[in-house]
Length: 557
Image (cartoon, rainbow, N blue to C red; front, side, top):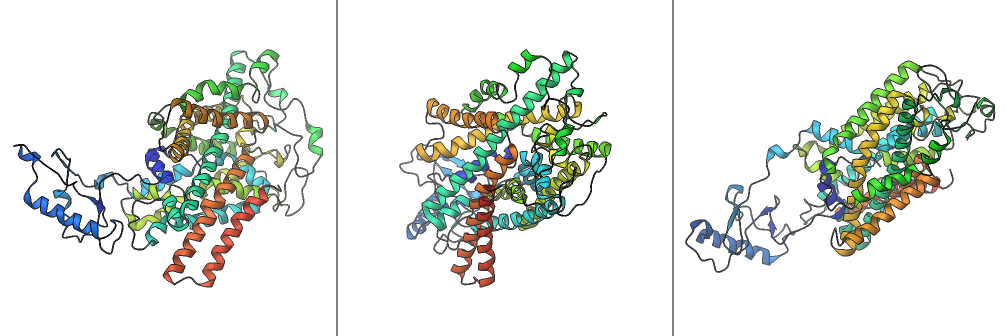
């Protein structure tokens, strides 16, 4: 689940909930609003009176609206009936006229802004697990899978982007992908898209809770050790030198190598000699509970607009991570040996059967399909949407490739085994590392501001669908938030493996919103147009099977 660019928060809410229609009627392809017919207007103020010309024009539009539904383009009012943007007013029943200002072209974004908005939206917690995914798949196979999955996700995202335009005789200009699913599959499509969208959001919130517990623990550890002059360099299994790399769990050896166990020098993790501090400051037992006192009240805020002001922290965090990875790689150097199928003492083979774990992670890492239509609506040049989407995916793929390859290649082997690379690669650096401490602090504050926004989106979807109100009552919202927070606390305590959480949530939501629904929508649309051919049917059926295989494989890894 990539970090949501919450500059587009309210647009994304429409993306997952569907566009809210008001009581006014919309006409023509440009959806120009027209006035509500006034009744019994009295008064001497000319600004509150309706001219005879406007009244006649209003009657004409109402005549056309009675011929057919306003969404039917065949009998929609012709352009000469609809007034120009400079002549549009909305009249209230009391006679007050409000000038309708057309869409401001300056509010549209140039291509470069749109591209980086998509990049910022996809850059999420998955970036921390890319090196681990490459390790699970093998270096060569991991790089190939990253490129192939990125291209596949780009194509499916392209299908989603063009899906509203392929619907004939219906004005779908304001539709999002859930609306498209409802059009083709009825209530089943609407609720299915909602459920799988919820999986991605709640999965992201669980990952955030695990990571926030991790970052808070290590940040507190750094501050405590600095204040009390505690030196933990001898209690950690890892390399020596100024750029120390550690192996928190050296006994974990999926490759079956046992020699690494004999190199274990002390207690795993970043522990101190103060037993009382360890008792009250535990990564799994206490720190996840401390976060409740801060985040549960924030989740209950009625509006999330305050937290959207801090979204710039997401971009800063990603840029700092790239700088951190570059500096570490320069200092550590490259440590690579190519063993195509055999595991050696310190290296993993280039091709491993654990590669589906990486495909699950990448499905969420490249996931933006449920809000791409909304993001692209702000693009000034709509004819460049496909190009800008492709460039954005290229930048995202290059960022993941850069971070994953550098961390994997720079991981010091020997003396450490490549299988020591953690699902969160920051865990391979000690809490005493100043640069990593800064990265963890940035990410912690960024996630504290994003977490309530994710909770707001979950609340909007759940409460809106069940009660028809985004905030039915404080107790309804509190009960929902307790369930969400409880799931995060339980995972942080009993299974704090963000790699597995990301791959399961990514494969689950990707099954419906990336593979099944886009492929089915595309095939049904082509079939109704009479242009569906068997190569296209076979390829898109293969996409559906690929999504199913991706999800099923996660249970056998």
